[in-house]
Image (cartoon, rainbow, N blue to C red; front, side, top):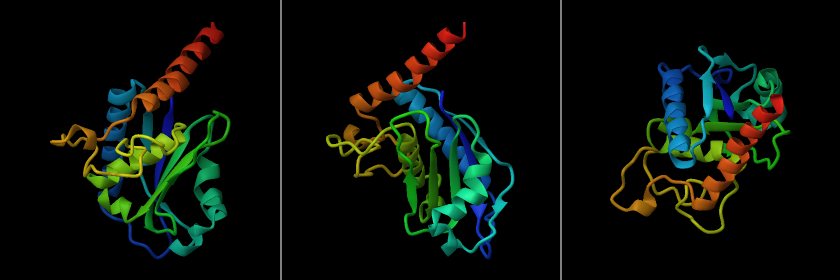
Length: 193
């Protein structure tokens, strides 16, 4: 089962936003429900209770080695996915590493403007980036899938009048996640016997 360790990174010179860690927890809870409802997989998560105060100003984190040295490397353990919620702007405001195997450490980063949109459209962006860390690429077919390029939904739990604009995973995305995570976990449990 996939597990996410999330942190709130505040670069040097930036202000810690009151309530941000609670917003991150709420968003991850919605993402957990979304993946359980859509694909039947359990995405476990935890959030560090206090912000990490960055050693560098925001612009220095555009070089991935600074992010790796301060946050990613210390938090990586086992197969946990590291989620970084960044209180600042980056050249790429949201991204998730995509790996088709379970060996490479995975992570996603959510920065401005999306971190300010948690509780709404930002939740959809977080679910999209988590999808990448779970092995989902951008699809060639269903542009309205949460992994597609069209984010029509304003919120992850939105009940839109038009079903195709509701946050969802395509049939092939659901099948892939079930095969990768549910079957793999069952095989691992069987081999432990």
